[in-house]
Image (cartoon, rainbow, N blue to C red):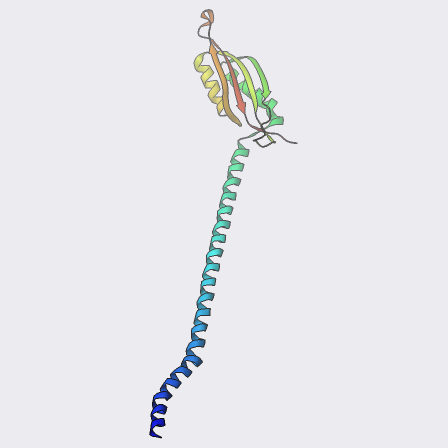
Length: 180
């Protein structure tokens, strides 16, 4: 019997250890593993949501910038149906600067498929006579006009008998909105 009591004294702690391991440690460790997996899933979800919120804020910021840009562009654009009165104001600027407009005509460049269909680019083909500095001041004032895009072409010539007065031919391009 003594032999069995020794097994009992040595085996009992071993059996209690195994029972404790099976009853407490295994369920607790599996619970901890599940909690870690949920925590990692929550971290990934939080990161995904954070990226989505940053993307949404970035899109809103770009949208606001685009709206501000569009408003600025719209303020500095002509309406194509107002272009005749604009041409009249250009001739008045020329008269104030001492420029004689020999010819003034409007050319509408062909529609570019890359551009917005409601945005057209009319150009004024101007034949001018005047002094060099007067022509320069006139072109500066035209450049400051609403809808100015660029000076496409310009030529200045003179004749000996009219020397202080130069003749110029300029093609000035503008941007305008076209209403449908």
